[in-house]
Length: 121
Image (cartoon, rainbow, N blue to C red):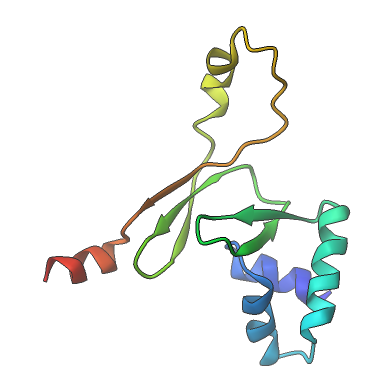
């Protein structure tokens, strides 16, 4: 499937609109098809939704190891962080809460190297 391959190839969280633009060059896939396919992929756990502060729903491959993201406030670039820093402290955070955690997300916001250099000018 071209849509799943595009998500894997792009190797970052992508919105349905970004997928549409990316696939325009190689495949003729309509927006509606992309939205329906993403819903199906999510139900089959092939992709997972990622929601950042900007409110845009993005998707990334479920085949990737659990990780978190750095998000540039200027250009919107999304960089993956290697590994998970929350899981090791999850038990201590939840101690005595009687709460079952099923998942978590963490995004760190700031400025990428390029945007930081531009801001310093």
